[in-house]
Image 1 (cartoon, rainbow, N blue to C red):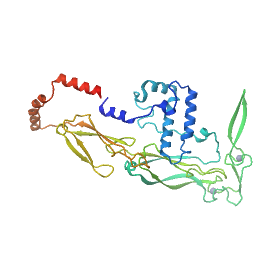
Image 2: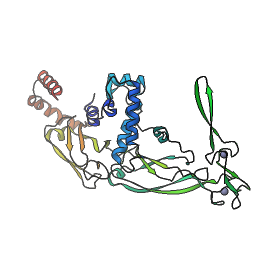
Image 3: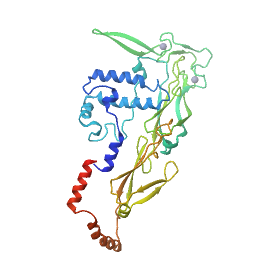
Image 4: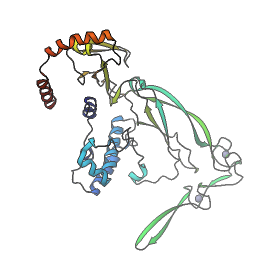
Length: 376
Ligand SMILES: [Zn+2]
Ligand SMILES: [Zn+2]
């Protein structure tokens, strides 16, 4: 593994999936499911609005469950841990979260609610440092303006369907052998709309909803990461039944890549390619930084490629409510010239012999390197 790769692995500090779910390594499938459900209820974003810690816990729980509830993935995890060959089972972007239905989790049914919507939205890297007030435009089913959502051209032309009481669905109970099975069907008299309409509106054909373009304003807070979702309560689809409430709009944020930083939570990682002379003599490099103050990287004399320099407190904010910031870790790299002129070659040849004398014999060198690598 390259020193760079080793560093990334070490910095990720991912928690053990069993610890996340608070179960032992030999937990049964039922225990896994039970623990997941109770934790997911506790940390579900619906129960903890505007709590980024609960949100990240929720995501962690989901990820652990996604792996441990799948026997094959669980086996791989038991053998390799987080460092499994072939990379993350969730692809190069890592775990992105899955949709877990609130209704499923809490055993509630709310049929008269409009659909939730999910849109993806990309923000510049700098938003993770400073936060950002942003907006986007979406096409969404809202109450039809012509009939004011009633679905009818005339006042009182729309009434709640008595068969389904406005739910639009009816449950049919049937027996399959000894089992009662509940099948949910669209209500026939109202064709699933939950209302009976006379003289239907010509704009929305009686649905009461029409596709409208709306602008949504929202704020992205410092520390935001790709995959984070903002929940805009009531900004999803209008309900298709008269007494319902609108769904929610989720905005999934994608933070664009920085020119040179890789990101690990609030910590940033970069490689700094230097000439042989800079590594040997030491140097100070100043580069523009995300907090608009130059980042000064002091490279000590006798540095080697692969060594790292960590600058604390200059990474990203930990979250919106904290003034603390992560660190910047710089991995030193050697950049040899692609082309050397004859005169440069001659100068390097001149110092080669002298250099050989200033470092140990080749075998001692190899041995020392191995020892220091192993004791790291
Ligand atoms: Zn009905
Ligand atoms: Zn209408």
